[in-house]
Length: 244
Image 1 (cartoon, one colour):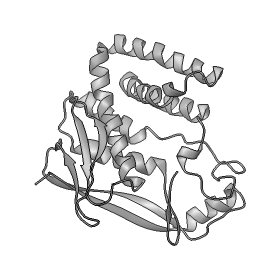
Image 2: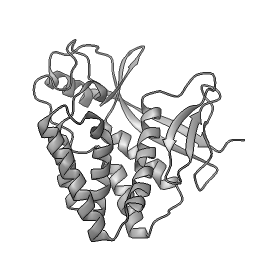
Image 3: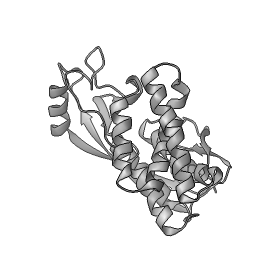
Image 4: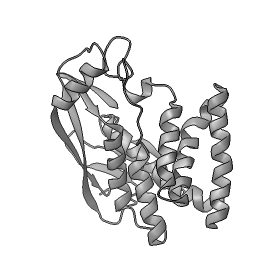
């Protein structure tokens, strides 16, 4: 979950919903792959945060009983293996992109766990096998994955309320074209500006749904899950616009 503190309690965005927002952003990028590969990239973007670990006990909570943001949770081998298992049924290209994402996320943690290192080693081996089978160079695979990572990052900036105040700019990351991109919002209710502008249209809107919780603390996962099911739904919308 992505958990934001708000004056009335908590705003919770499921990670799968954040991934759907990332796919909305990828949809607007001018395609640079054959149609089958392009659809596979969109699928990998949409589903990169699937297979979240089931809650048993207090997994979804902090030690203080608040909803736990995903940044407060450790590496989950169960989730990583689950998302790779699901990708397998959509083919080698989807598997390659998903595996590259897991490497991007968890290679910085290499050395912390023998089990995690074995998983990362397996990803490196499988990535090479998939590239060979698909006839895809390392550069081509990295270019395609760069869009997934870029859209993931921008989606997180929006979902986690990280847009800087007073119109300051924040770097997103390098795009698939190798250029560095920045995001800013000139005023609180103004459109979000991306520079340089990479999209096909000069302006478009994206959205994500969030659950609004007024209860601050929970006894266990069951109580949190019940509250989320009963929570009011807030649709967050942003207009993205070319610099003027």
